[in-house]
Amino acid sequence: MTILLVSDSDRGALACRLLAEGLERAGQSCLTVGQGCSDGWESPLPPETPLIPMGLMDLLGTELLRNAKAVGVFVESSDALKRFATAHRALAGSQGHRAAPIFSGPLKASLGDELMQQLSERLCCDLLLLPGERQCQEVKAMTRFWPKTIAAPHVLAMGLWFMPERPPRGCLNAGSPKPPHTLLALVQETVPTQPGGKAQLLRQLISWAEASPQWSVVVHCDEAWPSGQPWTSKICSSEWVFPQNLVFGAQGQLLTQLATCSACLTVSSAWSLTAMAWGRPTLVIGDYGIHTDQGTTSMFGCGAMHRLQSIRALDQLLELPRPDQAWLGSMGWGIPDGALRLAQALESSP
Image: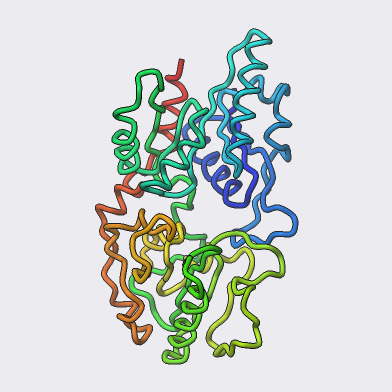
């Protein structure tokens, strides 16, 4: 029997492909279902084409779903997931056969209110995938005093299964970064949340580029963005004068940039964990504090948070201390066999 992995976004399609590869190494048969990046959007990730070009609700009533061993659903809409789960179980019951178990989980290592929001949207699932033991501990603490009428969710620590374990082939740089150096600035759509926060960050990047002409500065959106709309869409481009060594990242190049950069900077991008895991010096901007709306809650204790004013020249980035390895491990990097864990959990499910 086959495990179906369903997505409806570029990030989900990449995660499903990576999970399918891991499950197949563990002896499971898998099929990826869905679409990659929507039309009219540009993705920072390499293009992914699921094997079965079908939407989530289109699976209902098909032989593909009827014969599935389990269904992993990684779609953007929590309402779509709930509708699918309800309809799938009702249809299976009406036809007299067992519904395939449904599993899902957030595609980032969240903590605090953000984690609980992501999990509350997926309580309709039979199994919830979490990155690390730290997330499992938070879920256990949060659900400890739930009424007995509400079943605690079944959770499984899977590691950072939704991101590539290694850099793309041919991009691995051994040892310390060597010149010419590149700073990769992972910028986000809604962070920083303060009015003028994006402009302030961009001015800082321009200042660093001018002060360190031997460096290249690449500003790259960490999520898909509308075609033709730059990160600074609300700012008139004529107001800005960019030095020649500052450029904006191209579509599909994020993983390559992460692999080849000399250092990485962000407020709270989930891809900063990839940079850390791949050994890139990483600066998490601490100027905005530890707040849910900034996405920095999960960065508490990482050992990589610094203020912008502490960096005057980009060469200082090469001297940043490594992130706390215990923190990185607890956030999922310490679990290398996530796909095998999932395969075993599905084998033992009733």
